[in-house]
Length: 475
Image (tube, rainbow, N blue to C red; front, top):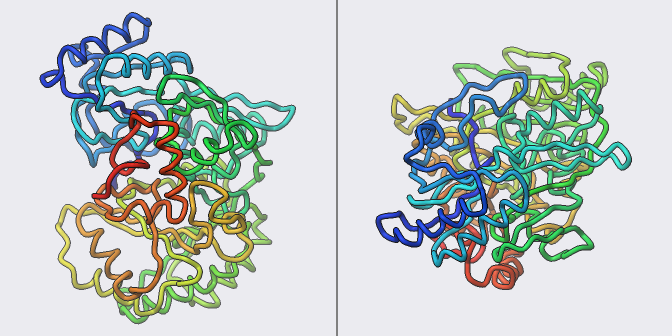
């Protein structure tokens, strides 16, 4: 299974390869070193280790940044240099140097992959601080901090927690930039819903503090489209009491005689149950977690099995909060499908998906699975907000479906959507699909015009423009 190594620690400023614009690149590198920034070049002995993608094994204990390179193995690009800032002022200097060098075509990357060779990578390896304030129970976090380290430190040192993603190796910077979902999000909201303020470096190198009362338009924009507006160097979140234990419950339906019709009925029943599921329950496919004691959880499990039927096997365990997050982390998503509550998947759509599994030839080296994440339903906090509350717009939806695949993701999506041609399906920018057409509407829906206007205001020269950033053309 591929590692979950996406848009975590690196922001990339795309600049022409040295062979195409050598003088501009040398000017840029000279400026960076003049400002005493730590810069790594292709001639350095550490370069190969820093730029070669590779798979990782998920650990269950911190620190989660050890033995990890911050590149997505789906993409292979060769940067011109890597700069390692230690503080916000260093990031400001890096942006200012890039602008002053006369290199006009460079782009900020918050999604962990490059659009071309010759990029300047701004790595947040050294900006991973986690500072908890016991007075107001907030936490300020650097963009390079990993979710696993955040969860572990907040829980073990302070008994606090945040709702965020499952994979411990994912970085706070990219995860927060586009929403940030986790198993506690139906109860506490997306990570952006817990965000109180941020420090942002703009396209001219200036530094601003943004919140609901300070530059509110920018604050709204970074809550779902952060990479289009600047480089966030610090996030401040409101924390919650961490649950004493979490019930990890798994149901396995592994009947080899399961037909397409039976699969569709099982999936439809699961979906129908999710429409009224209480917000304390986090559920992903056959993994159910919540912040309740084991005795309280059994009736919830029984209500699900009442509609789905009994599984072949069951796993049940009470685990510590950060341990569960490390255990259930998965690999790199290759795309997504957002399913609105107004148009839940039909039996025909589930049947078409099953038929696709049964009849589509799959290369022997392909590894794939699908994850149905329940975001809405019942009294979910995610869907309690209007679509205009944040730049992330998909508040009135039931599912976000992740596709983990290297070969036939397009067929998976079309198998369902073609069965429901009138449904307003969408997509989630944190599960990036670089080949997605119509991404402006699918990622941002009715919020895109406002985002486009703000992008022209705060980045008129397109310093942070890149593929699938606000203002970029469709594919």
